[in-house]
Structure formats: C-alpha cells, structure tokens
Image (cartoon, rainbow over the protein chains, first blue to last red):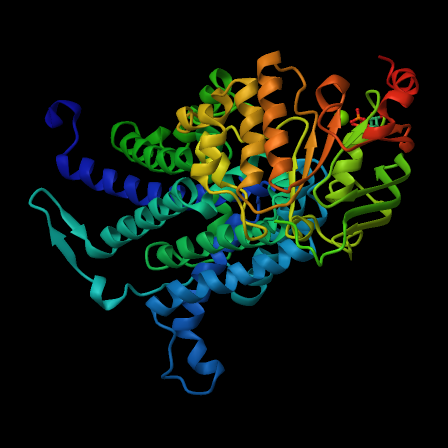
Length: 304
Length: 239
Ligand SMILES: Nc1ncnc2c1ncn2[C@@H]1O[C@H](COP(=O)(O)OP(=O)(O)O)[C@@H](O)[C@H]1O
Ligand SMILES: [Mg+2]
C-alpha cells in the first residue's frame, strides 16, 4: 500500500509524530484560550507572546542567568524553568488583568481582542529589540537525549515527553474543570458570573486567577517548545494564528473540544504533509472555512 | 434558632437609590425586616421590586443610601462579601446553571454561615429534586427549577432569604407546595423577603407587605391591617 502511494512507512510515521507534537502544542494553547474566553469573554490575542515569553524565560535561565548574577556557572535548568516560567508569566498576566483587562468586561469582545493584540505587539517588540529576530537554540535536557526504538520507528525521547506532558496538563485541567467543586464555580461563572458572586464566591479573584492560569499554560507550552523549535521573539506570532484557527474549529470556550481539536488537527496537518505536502500549510484554514460555513459555533461549541 | 440577644432588626434599607447606567430606578426605598419575619414587596410590573433585591446584593449599577444587614452597613461592600453576611438569593429568572447537573446546582453555593440544612433534609423537603438529581439543569421543568433555586440557598446557612417571583408561571399545585415550603422555613426561623405579583399566594404567609411604585415604597400594611387596607391595596396593585 505504501508503495502504491509512493511513500515510505518511515515518512508516514515521522510526519504523524510531528503532527502529534504540533497537535500537543495546539491543544495546550487552545485550552488556555478556551479557559480564558469562557470566564473572561476575552479573546486573548497576547497568548502567542506569552508562549514566547515562556520559551525565552527557559533560554535566559539556562544561558544568561549566571552572567546576570555574576557567577556564570549558575543556571536555571529545564525543570526549574518548567515551573518558574508559568509562574512568572502567570504573575504578569495577573497584573495585566487587574490593571487593564478588568476595565473592559462590560464592553464588546472586540476591545479585549484589540488590547491583548496591542500587548502582544509590545511584548514581541521588546524582545526583538533586546534579542534580535535570529533565534536561539535551547539544548535538550540530558535525560531526554537519544531515542527509543519502537520497532517500527525511532521515537526521540524529548518528543515523547512533550506529548506526555501536554496530555497530562490538558487532562488535569479538564478534570479540575469538569469534576471538582472549583471547576463547578468556573463552569457556573462562565454562564452567569454575577449570580455566582451573589452566592458568595469571590468571582473577580477567580477571574484574575483564571487569566493567570491560562497564560501560565501558554508559558508552560513555551518551555516545552524551547528545545524543539527555535526560541525567537516571533515564534508565538506564527503559531498563534494556527491556534486561533484550531479554536474556531473546536468552538470557542469548549474545554474538551479544544483538546481534541488541537490534537486532531495536528495529526491532519501531519498526514497532509505526507500525502499532499503543498497543502499542509493551509489545510487547517481550509477546515476552518468549511466548519464556519456548516457549524458557525464550532464542532464542540454551543451557540450563545 | 433566633438568638435572643441579637437585635430584632435583620435588614434595614434606608433612602436607597439605585441606577442601571444612567437610568435612575430606585428613588429612596425605605423598609425594615425583623428577624423571623416574612415580608413582601408588592407592586406592578416595572415598579422596582427586583431592582430592590438586586441592589441589596450590589448587583445593580451605582447604589446610594444605606442597607444594614444584621447592623452592618453594606452599601460599600462587594457582592460576594454581602452574601457572607448570611444572605441567600433566588433570582426572578431562577438562574439554574445549564452546564451543571441538578445536584451540582444544589451543591454550588458555598456555605455563608453555619447551620445550613443538610442535603438529606433538603431532599426530604423536595423529593422531586432527589429523583432528578443527575439531570442537567436545563432539563428540569419550570417547577423543578424553581424548587432547586430555593433549595440551593437553604444549604448555605443563609438566614435572610431574598425570593423573587417564585410563584410566577407555575401550576397551582406547585404554588401550593411552595407555600408549604415558605411556612416550614418561617417555622424554622428564616427571615424572608418575597417579591410577588400573586397577592393571593403571599397574603396568608406574610407578616407585612410593602407596596413599591416608581422606585419608592408607597404603602406598608401589616397582617392586622390587611382587611382594613384591602381596598387600597387592590387599587395600588390593580387587582
Ligand atoms: N438591567 C436593566 N437596565 C436598565 N433598566 C432596567 C434593568 N432592569 C430593570 N430595569 C428597569 O427598572 C425598572 C424596574 O424594574 P424591576 O425592578 O425589574 O421591576 P419589578 O421587579 O418591580 O417588575 C423598570 O422600568 C425596568 O425597565
Ligand atoms: Mg421583577
């Protein structure tokens, strides 16, 4: 069969793997967007910049931090970065939400979109000014160097880790939202935040922390991405366009929808590369157009 | 349940003004609710009764004047902080969450004071809700939604209940059930403010009635004065 189509199994598996990796990033990023949109009603256009900051924090921690503090041997390693980057970017998110986004909730979606778009341009501009556009390499952590022999293909260990870590974070988030008390506040708050607050829940605080968590997820994805993709100020801007298409296809605000759609579209993109590689860059957008025409609320979305 | 040493007055609203954006809706509402009383806010549609309840919880736009709950001034407090003074709110539109099951809706509101009813007690009071506990909120009938909206604030320990048009659009047997529920709650020492259109439903339940018109209280009627002021009430309410 492979011969018939003029492709090798190796090419198929390796493209599927790349598809799964990309899909993992789409899933984590669109999940963050969905969580934020659900409660804040804001389309967070700075998500890509926050993802990029996560990757940069990892890179800066590994290569620059020692120089900053005057002892070049000191490093913030990968694991610490995986914890620290989401916390730092999340904290910055909290400040952005409190000082700026909180003023926009009564207005149309469009204002939040414009504000976060502006924030993204500023952040990306600052990083470009400081570090240029050429991009930096981040070394794969030692434990993940090498590959696992699966019999039919070699699976690079770090890529396996990215898939495992992304899925774990996605499923953990899904579990918290769908199966816990805190999650029931979030779901109810998505429907009617004023009433949830009238029941005694500190909804403004919940909104602030939700934004912090959502952009923290983006930074987490950024750290995961640092050893695979080049760390550059525009890495998020390129990716986020695709992620927005994923969100539109899955349905804005649907948690499970964003996870499933993210992974699925990553795979479809990978398959397209094998069978008709000319279309691989646009296939997601073609699907988006079709979905928008047939189901404007997205595959998993509800009309509101 | 009522503490003998506590002051009799649980809620005192004085010169309350409330706005939605630029529209000035309440023009100086004054009324008092004592511990353990059932008090109604009557009036025609659009009189400002719902807005009064919402203003007590800080759910309107700007509000001015004074709202004392248990002797505490709440006019400057955040909505969630007011709830924690022991206030339970059942909104006019019922506010059942569609994405939550009936039981998740019941368990949603956090405890705001000690001494709330247990889930078992609540299911004993509303047997239908027990049968429907796994159904999504949006699948419940109007009557079930109304019972759930009341039931879920009984779990929280709130002692001051603000109920908005609970009999609206419901079949007579369900209205009867609700009136038994209100009686039971009164016996248990709850303090209840009911906004109503259906005077016949609340007349036998309430200690006092206030009539709202154009954002003001225009008449107060105690149970003892009911016969004597009946004609006036009919005129005010247009019944
Ligand atoms: N969200 C709102 N924005 C602007 N005006 C409102 C809003 N809600 C109610 N109103 C107005 O406030 C007045 C009082 O309404 P309401 O308190 O709901 O009356 P009632 O509950 O007594 O029927 C009405 O004139 C209504 O049109
Ligand atoms: Mg009303």
